[in-house]
Image 1 (cartoon, rainbow, N blue to C red):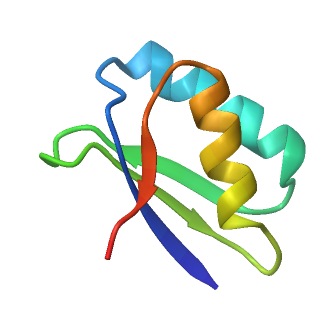
Image 2: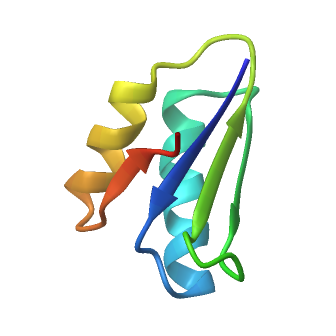
Length: 69
């Protein structure tokens, strides 16, 4: 399963912190950012994760995060 999110994460340091947090909750998934994309893409790929939980975790750290449609 793959989900792509639009975020407002700007800096590599911020992206790394978010990836670390998400991997703690969803180990074994592939999680990365494309900060060069205009939508500051967060991509999550794996067998089991919850899009709503990802949105909540990112939002809890002060960033917007919505599923890209």
